[in-house]
Image (tube, rainbow, N blue to C red; front, side, top):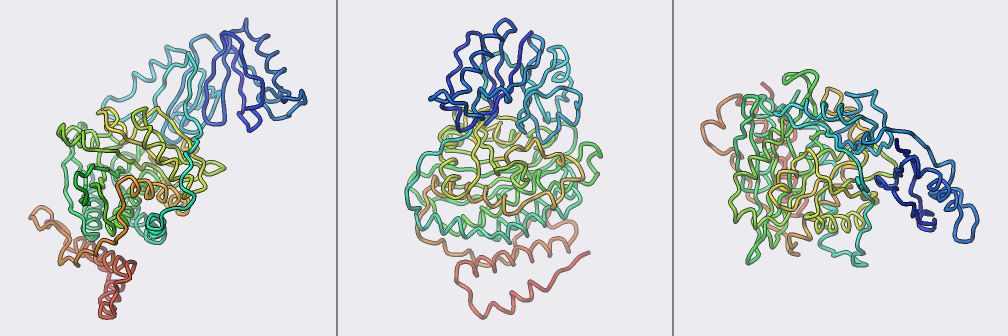
Length: 499
């Protein structure tokens, strides 16, 4: 048997006497930690905790790690400690009776015997990306920690600040509303195809070069990845990717059931489109690509097949991949963002932490345990990648069902994460100070091939109208508006058609 002690790491913890009891180990998740000790070590550990309750002068601090009120002893069987990494609250929803010893949102520590844990893991469908995973805990483990950003320059570059400030809250709101207007964005549905066509139209209207990749879904059907490229102007440009998954899912109701997917993942997809529109107005040393993946909810199929299609030279040229998945729901106080990567992603994590500290007031959390989103296939291929996800996403019980609606998204919070990501990508890709001239207004934002033009003509007309509005907004934002455009602007605003 072992004894588990719940403790909270506070600002006074640094002054507390360090624990030196042999055989004791820890599990840490941000500001929380568990101390684990054999029963035989419990008296010595308790004495050490009581001793450390005083500060350096011997006075009681009342909120140090050793405060007796902060100690909770629980007996568990040897080998029963398991960590859980989950999307939203999906593990807790499926296994509500499993005792949770530490709850840190995306990460849990639970009391579960080894045989049951193995049975749960073995029962996960091989063709579905698991919504949670269990792993045994038997040594010091850091599930995630609070970042300590490097100090940036006292004054931010004017061009970088202007770029971040140019990201429009109202435009982001418009983009996310469009994405949740489809009843579902299930990877193999007709609605997903419409959303993909619309997204490609937005990229094209921003003057970006677009492409599509067909994605096969092992359980049947196909989906697609939508990509847009912004060419760098440097002599030997590296390649940065900004990615998110476009699809949504309703696990309980099935492929045709309502799945608005507002937070998971219209919030991230809309952010990719907004970042593309903002960055397309500037020049960079490096290439930047924006990719919306299909098939994520069925097993990361879009990103896995994207990575599999990269040549060796293309893989080597990718400097980093920034993934946005669930960036819109506020689950914790203070508001936080989790930067999840791997040891090879540390340089990106450091840069994102610096940008987050400079441009937001978010608590910055770091995990080196990548799980269940589109950054994982890149990391598996040896490519640095980081997921930016809302802090304590385990408090979000709405995803993967009909309740993931726009009301669950806090636009202002999402804009903070977007600001951090914009600043990071722009700085790392080599932002040039001059503005990129706006792309000419396209006669048609479609590709022009027969496959794309088959189907509902009203839908294609509406996609073109939205793209035209985006171009008008770019001209307004870049102070290149001319009165001769007023009539066309008013017509595009007023004209909306439906089948």
